[in-house]
Picture (tube, rainbow, N blue to C red):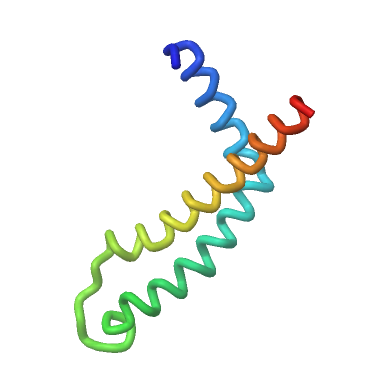
Length: 86
């Protein structure tokens, strides 16, 4: 992939990722999944006397947000390519 086509790909990808519907859905997924994972993985911090690891806490919300965003953008891109071909 040439640098110019890579820039075009990234610009298109980020444009889709920034749409309100994708951002909103990814936020909701991150809120639900991140909360559940934090309860599972850091229950001793929340309900016990262990010290908090704030990096883990934040990443536990950011990872589902990123995965949901990626999946939604790729689904839209794939659907768009199928419509153009077919």
